[in-house]
Image (cartoon, rainbow, N blue to C red; front, top):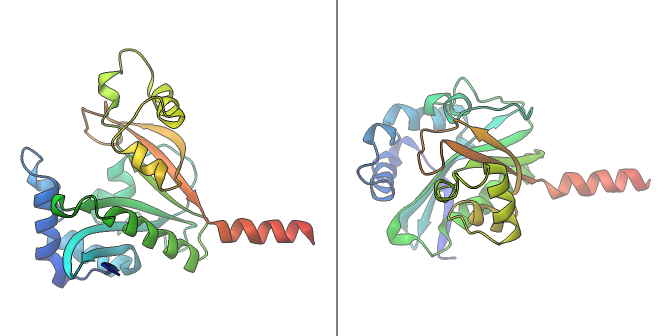
Length: 215
């Protein structure tokens, strides 16, 4: 396989920071890149959710997740991510894997890096017998039509295929299903400060439930 996904460690910090620099260049604020304390917190708090992707041996991308008990309550990125440290928001007995970050270096885009990281997250959900993987995504195309339609209507148009959104369309291709629109999720003018929370349900648990119902 050309792509290898493994847990990242604090020793990977320089490579992780370089990927962040390349993926989010200026004017993206540098203080929003992961810092060493945040990486250490990810590794210490939930190492299984700290993933790095290598393409032919080169660091190409990363993803960070934590466990939560899904309630359906609206939230912001800072709340669910504990300002990027996850210590205060990670729930060891949670039923859902929540993705707070995915980053791919531009040099490796189009090579299946993000897809591989999502596949690794789904595999973690299966192995841990969690109910679902959830993540909130930006909708950067929304600002261009915000005067004509609500964010909910925009999501439905993207679902129907009559509109394309750079991020949401990709998420749908990962078999993610929209749950709700979140207001003020991030300071993100392109998305009008909104995000779409999506889920991928663990098919193994569904199959077990179907078998139980038949017995």
